Amino acid sequence: MFKIQKLQYKNILNIENLIIPHNKITCIIGESGSGKTTLLRMLNKLISPDKGTIFYNKIPLTEMDSIELRRQVVMLPQSPGIFKGTIKDNLLIGLEFSEKPMVSDEELTKILEIVNLKKALDNVAEKLSGGEKQRLALGRIILMNPDVLLLDEPSSALDEDTELMIIEKLVTYCKERDKTLIMVTHSKKIAHTFGDTLIKIKNGEIVNQEEV
Amino acid sequence: MDGIIQLQMWQMASAYLFIILLLFIVRLKGIPREKEILISTVRMTLQLILTGYVLVYLFDNINPLYTILTIIVMETFAISNIYKRMKNKLSKKIKRVIAFSMVFGTLFSLLYFLLVVINISPWYDPRYFIPIAGMIIGNSMTGISLGVSRLIDGLRDQSNLVETALMLGATPKRATKEMVNNAFDAAILPTINSMVGMGIVFLPGMMTGQILSGVSPLTAIEYQIAIMLGIVGSVALTVIIFVQLGYRTFFNKEHQLIMEDH
Image 1 (cartoon, rainbow over the protein chains, first blue to last red):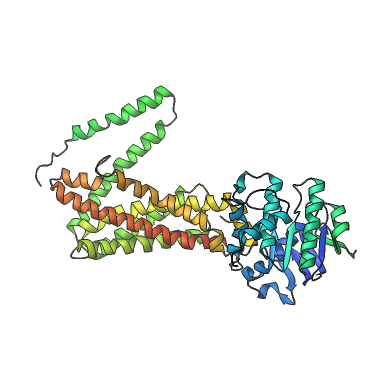
Image 2 (cartoon, one colour):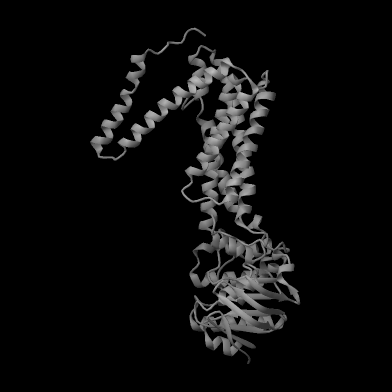
């Protein structure tokens, strides 16, 4: 899926070799400031490395159109932007951005169930709490049905019980549909419970990669 | 055309009483603006005297080169004024876009206005060319300044939304659509508002000038309507070129948002 060779980015990342497997749940752990988010942003081609190559399905990212890549490899940032309008507008906007066909309200409601957001579709999105916004944004990218989901601390604003429930639903969803999930998490419990592969980053370098 | 009262020196001087009044008020209120008021009054006076003499010379020595030179000077001043007005440092790329939009937008509107609407002859007649260029360039300068600051502020304040949209596979054009529309709106709104108030709330400068110099108010309004439409057209054209090219300077060829140098 993703293969990284001799990657360097400022003083933030320095990765000699890294393979992130296809159709698996990969959890990236490490202290804050270790370069986890930078790595995700690079896989989404939101930034490019100074040196080295990232391959996606054996093709170097430099040879891929950034927009096409981001439509297959979608990223959820830690503080996702919520757009003006309703919950429905915010769910559909991902489809609009990626020029995918719209879906029915019924499907949108199903998505809200997956992310455990018990709100009506016509509620104003900006009035949601931090945790609810995070779940809405998660729902938005699930709806886009991408091949790869890059999630940066998708549950940081949630309490532990909700966090475990949402991640479990998300992991089940990804496994049922053969998706690749790459998730930065602060929670060792989540990483060890759900991750197929664990990658530990320290000071921009991969210090450990293990199969669980 | 001979009905105009020529101002005597003492009459001119008496008009400065307004400035003395203003200075008195700011001193009384303790507002530290005396220096600026004095400097701007002196600048205004000197600049206008100089312009008066330059215009007299240009009208007496009609020459296409002089007209072209005047337009170049006006455009240069307008563009550097836009750069100076911005509180943030502008990137080289966006400066180029501003200059291009100003030159292309104003010249296109100006030439259309002079050659098609008014149909002046010769095409470089400074009596028409220069004042009308001044109005078109001046208004476009104000419009584009508003557009530039609104676009930069919008993209900076909402860079999180732009990045979220990019992460979801949006094109830079789609990701910045709201900020671009807001910038266009902010730039064009004062011109639209001034059309609404025109003739009722205030009499526009050009029309007032023509009436004072003895032209029939009916002729004066014809010109005013035409120039107002020309101004709207020029502001719209200049700003639309700017926003359409301007947002692109915030992205590199990999469609990545680059905010550092803006």
